[in-house]
Image (cartoon, rainbow, N blue to C red; front, side, top):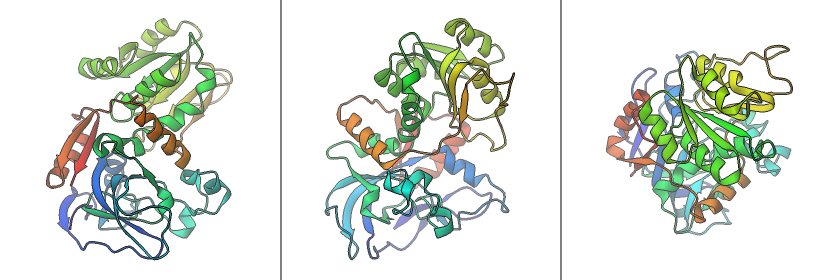
Length: 346
C-alpha cells in the first residue's frame, strides 16, 4: 500500500510503498478515508537527530478517519463496516487518568512505549492503518470524513482548552484567539457556539483576518507591534477573560500576556519553536491569571465534538490532497499558505 513517511532526518516526507498491515490481537484495521496534516508533524520533522525520538521510517498522520475492515482476535465493541474517526493520544487504558477518558494525560504511556499514531506509531497517511484498540474509535455515522477528521486534533485541542474556561466567558467578556489557521478557526466557531463572549482574532495579514471574520470573529486585529494596545482598546481596562495562542512563538506569547485580564486564562496551544515561554510572577502576570499549555483532549470530549458535528455547528475549512500529492500539502503547511486544514484523501 502507499503511505507518506518521514524517512530521513531533515528531509521532506515521501510517498512510499509498504506492506498492508494485519491486525493483531485486540487491534482494528481501518481503510483510511481521510487523514489530516498538522503543524505537529512539521515540528517533529524539524527536530535535530539528537532530539528526534519517534522512529524511522515513520508513517505520518495523527488525524485519521476510516472504515473498519478487519478485527483482530478478541477485538470487540465495533463492527466491520463502521465509519469512524481515531482518538489519537493513546494511553494504557487502566490508570486513573485513562479511566476518566483522559488518555492524553496517561502517566504510563511513555514508560510502556505507547505513542500516538503518526507520532511514534504508524499513522493515518496511508491506505490502511492499525488502531491498537476499539476504544480509540468514535463512530461518525453519515458525517463526511474529510470535513470531520480535523476534529480529532484541530477540533479536540481547542475544545478541551475552551471547555475548562467556559465559566469565565460571561456576557460582556472577551476571548482572544491568536492565529486563525487550522486550529484557530475551529476555536472561533466553538467560542461562538459555546459562549456569549466577544471573540477577537489576531493574525498577520488582512487575508487571514478576513478568514477569521468569515468564521465568526467579532473583531479581527493585525498581530503587529501595536496589537496589545489595539486589543486593550477593545477589551477595556479589564482585559481578556481567555487568551488562546495557537502560534506559540515569543512575540505571540508576549501579546497573549499583554492582553490578559485579572483572573483570566492564558492557554498556549501552538508549539512555536519549542523554546518560547511566558513570563509568570508577581508584577509580570495579571493577578490570579493562569497560564497553561494543554495537550490534545479526552476521549469523551471527542465524542462530544462528533455530537456537535451532527448538529451542524461546524464549517471546517479544508483543502483536499490526494495521497500522491501529500508532500505538497506539507510544503504548503510550512509556507503558511493553507486555508484551514489540509486533508489527505487516499
